[in-house]
Length: 606
Image (cartoon, rainbow, N blue to C red; front, side, top):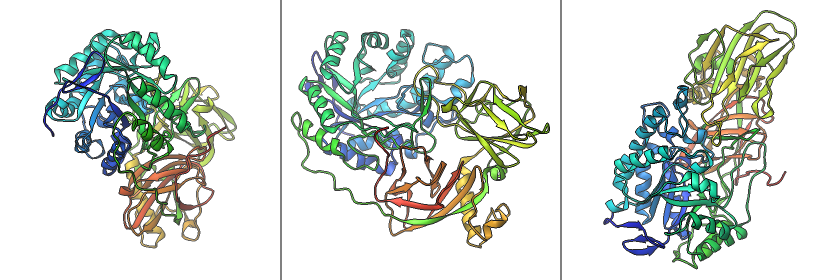
């Protein structure tokens, strides 16, 4: 902590201890970066010439289960803010409660919407009570780290692009009340795209308006000034790149064009928050999705074509932005070190049991007459295996009542029949013989993070029928993905002839050859390193699934692309033996673990 300072909004500028001050910020989400790398990323932001770090706070990461608040390890917001202060920088905190950010459910916890009476982002009592508890937890961390207490925090945002969603001023006023009562004394802001309607709907007297845009800077500053007659102009999200979704191309933007827009903004006297300075990674199952007529799940990589790439290395934008910033502020002489190639290695991948065989080891079963949703199972993310018995025989058509959310693999007696995919609007599949055990392996690919479908439930909505007759007698087994790495370790032991917890489940042929089963299955392998290092795991020749390294869930992969590699942060690896666990849902063309020298995030055109 340093000596307390005063940060205020003046007639024309932000003011730091009474002197004009320009915010030069970069977005860096602590929950998208391994905590051992926070200090490195913050330091590199200062080397680009920035003086402030901005972060969202993801409610559903901190309180995945109601009443179980976490702020440790990779969710230690206090430590993150302390590292910002140690670098001599300021901080902007944006706690939402809705953040969008291409993050699962826009940051809102799934448990919130199990109660059908809860109102999303409005002054509904159940929602406000939960939001108030959440904000108080956040502000217990933020309040003692405000600049007037010797900490780094200079601004706190109320809601997030609310003008694109609603008009409930009572709701916004309640968020302000809770924020002030929790001890937040720094100026409060809002953010909206600079259109008259959004700025009018998303603002509130007493809050400083900011904008989100990445082009047509002069025009958008003029619109913002119409609604913000005095005070500093701040682009709270200067979009310098974009996110990717599965099946599309890897989005890039021209560095020179972005630098020109940044120069225009700073030349006009504006302040800026570069979104993103460093995007990082949607580790685990944290990716969101969009649905504007077609469901589009977000990729694991959140590289964002940012100034600092997913692995923490400067891009062309870093140097272009640094040069622009140097015209308006002092930039350090120090520059980041050159990128070094990552280790390239190859190791075998061993086949294991099918997911249907493994399911009893990965979760308890519950019996239901009719098909339950994930939310009725209180299983907010991941995989559920549903089974029932078909006795009719003969061909038939299986249909889902309302919608598949989001992908379902259909098997009879363990043999794959096909897939139902939400992004293809599929609800029906032909069964060649409706006899035997029907298994449906259902995957949640990420909850919608923007628009009216926020808060929707997951699973096979409105039941499953065979030729129009609803199927009953379901066994539902939510899969505990945290248990997968230990089973993979057992598989490695069994393949090494050491016995292992999976020996009894291994297919008989596995002792003679690496036979990969049809349908969803477990696979495992290992590799060695001389020292911990960033790695780029090549998944091009795999199908669709999840992968862990040393028990750390990297996230989803999919041959659909665009991304080909998953980043393995150096702190996840270790010198010597490293274990890999793969939960593959479809098929693998080459049963090998392969890493590349650099990231391959895919084609940039379609």
